Length: 474
Image (cartoon, rainbow, N blue to C red):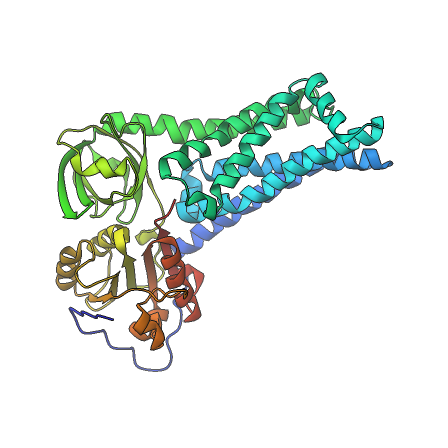
């Protein structure tokens, strides 16, 4: 393990063991918003169940065939509702971003994928079973009858197949076999899956029959979700991109395959971007225009300029070092709660690995703390391999922060964020930063590494509200 400290560690406060700081008023407001949104999502599921029951659903369990059919209808309603919640979580609504942050919103989005799929699979299986029992038919014969005689059912089966492809491609083991560009293209099929499933919901069965309240409510749900996606994923980004006229001002080489891209535009202060946030960027060159990628700000936003630092990992991002001055840039954002708004304490601990140093560096530049009130830990496989190391050292020295550069390879087969020798010696985040429980912790790096740091922090007694992280993994 290699350690480099630019400033002496701040002394521990006298008098007793450290305690977690009290919640900040901004944090309390955010939690109230988060609680409200969670309640609304639960209410949305309760409403579709209530609609089913109000339409006489509770009375349709008299025979095995009716029971299977009713359970199939109910599972389809709840599964579709969860699917709409998933789409809203991925629609980058400002309210959701302010309440949960993009990382946590997408984590919930991913966790709902399997339950929604299982419910929709159960929907199809239970309906086929119920119809087969009612008509004294075989399951294959009933599937054929549904495909050939019921309106819009072929589209429903296509939608279910597309949804299976999306969920399977999102499983970590499967996802890592895809290049980002291919995975992203497959993931867009979720929109088609939802669209082609709508007709059969309206034309098959009587629950959503024409002229009923439940039909109008169901259509309003789909319209609200579609409108949110259209507005926040397409209309607003296009308007902002045109208004601010962002272009590439220059590209600076940081390391092999890593560059800092300087951007300039008009009235960028109107974006209200904060250090630590990220944007979805699209560079309008022949090889890059068709792909958009999330990159964090690597410098605090100011004036009419922004900066990102990126590492070429996919086919498209490998072309970023060749960007020329004047290349037009469109964007979505800013997004994320990896900012000062999440603070609960005057003390800071910033931990980064790899290209995760980008948002950490911008935070360090603009965060409010007294000299000696911040500790920065940079991890790299070998000494001198870290990105933006010189800038981080200069910032720490200028702002009075403690810098530790910890080099070395992680132990094989062990979920440790530290080098093998440090992990074997029992070194932890709390031993490196004795004031840890009195601080806010910001962590950014690869997914498994970040998870290991967060687990270490929670083992040390840090509360959820004190731990903030961004995981660089698609």
